[in-house]
Length: 105
Image (tube, rainbow, N blue to C red):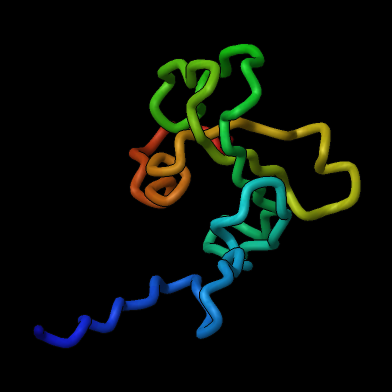
């Protein structure tokens, strides 16, 4: 009889087998501040689990359907919460590559 193989642990699993939740920008609903060429932004990942309404992405002008994970961002100054915008995650990452004539958000 051959010996049992050791099972590899996942990246978020402790030695005792209990799961660990990842902490950082990938956790939905946690705000973080990002600095970029266009200023400082408060960014929140949205899981899309809530069956809410559809939003229009300012990066690609396409609809973000209900239930689709995306990013919500707003300027990191006081009163910037009124400037909140919902972005596709890839559009948010590539916002520096937008062509001329496109607004900031």
